[in-house]
Image 1 (cartoon, rainbow, N blue to C red):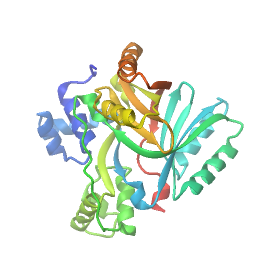
Image 2 (image 1 turned 90 degrees about the vertical axis):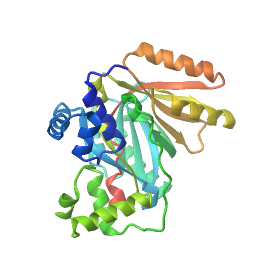
Image 3 (image 1 turned 30 degrees about the vertical axis):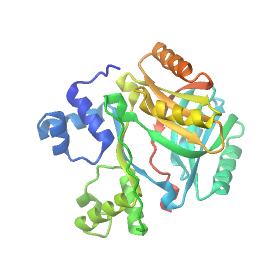
Length: 314
């Protein structure tokens, strides 16, 4: 896919996708430009609305939370109220607009399935005249490969675990990092009652113990002439399912995969610059895995990033 950017901008975005905390000096070296030029280009990408935010992906299970995916079909008369509700919610960590069977997709977090169900019931009752239909399914595992769009190989997450238990100061640090992954230690020290070196050490502990999974960047892909489709595919053969999972992970156009607990289907995302290419991608997948069946396809645009919901820091 040809992107409407020059090589330096593409290299900067690719580097940020892998590690949004890279200092500007490192970004400049990666892009082959001066520090001043890298700073200018970064600001320009932000001003153009290509870069929306710098996000920190956190292991919510280590903070005592689980998640569910909810897809809703809606009417149009209360859409602005519904959007406002989603943006202000303390339990929602991701929202995508859809064109297809569903109008919105979202991730809801809770300390257990009962809490998630209670929250969803409250949302449904509040908007029962707006929500026509819904699908509710529990998250099992998510994989993200957005760096493929920039010609980069996916970053393999290192399995990290440890006995370190995050305290209240750690949670405050995480709460700031999820809204701006590029905030520096000195700036953090203005809010957190610790020195910059002490904060740096805590962040390293959060990384090594698996609380922080990666730092990335939230982009408006439509401004890169890239359109993201969400595709649900049914697969009942466990052996075939693992082969399909491996195949999708290596496919150059697949940007994410979601597995769901107890369901025979999985969801994956595809980036294309035109619908004819999407058809080609799907045909190849169907020919490679003839026992699988495409359930549904939706055009998707993320409006709230994958950063943890506010509730995990309560």
